[in-house]
Amino acid sequence: MENMTGKRVPTVTFRTRTDEGWLDVTTEDLFAGKNVVVFSLPGAFTPTCSATHLPRYEELYDVFRQHGIDDILCVSVNDGFVMHAWQKDQAIKKVRMIPDGNGHFTRGMGMLVDKEYLGFGQRSWRYAMLVRDGVIDQMFIEPEKPGDPFEVSDADNVLAYVAPEATTPETVALISRVGCPHCQRAKALLEQKGIRYNEIVIGRDIEQTALRGLAGSTTVPQVFFGGKLIGGADELEVALSA
Image (cartoon, rainbow, N blue to C red; front, side, top):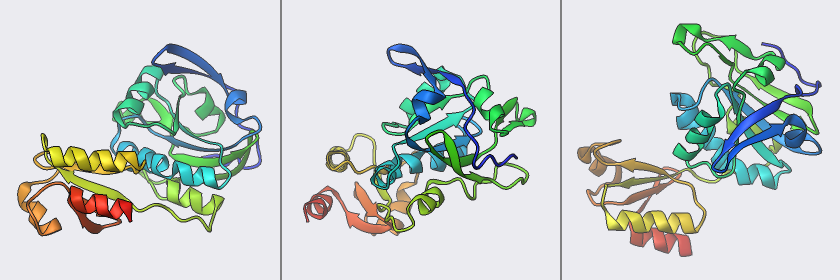
């Protein structure tokens, strides 16, 4: 992999997709006069990318903004339709999804790799970078190991470089059941406060028998902040109003 720290990002026009149709976006539009964090990954809808890489950048977006970052871009060698669908599937509101369908940007970054053994064709190696006014300030390139290493391009590691003093919000998890009105109330309370949460659905993501071991109860919802049990919707409302 090529480390391009100190160089300008490649000049590319991206064909992005919105609800209104196609929108051409240039690297000048994205980087000129801005401090931008970019993270690039092998593919939309793939496990590590969907479970960890993308959602954590979305969670920490406001923290990055508080420390001088103007935007966060997610780049993948996928077409605009796929990236737009992935954005909706993941409920991404803040991170900007950038489809590099032809791989021109990724090739210019020296990060285009052969994933034919997976049936992917040419894809991006996983990496992140901080770009200031179009010039790469620092790169975080995953080590050249077999598979899909994920050790240095994560949001927390990049934030530690951008702002070592930054504090991050606690991870919030909500255990729910389909059709539960109290679960809907708990989710509404979190959303009103702008708190992003991970929903764990009984029968889909976890078995009923595991709930008692985690929460000491079989009722739902059960809400956890940073691994600490808050309780149900009533307890959550009290905690949020404190």
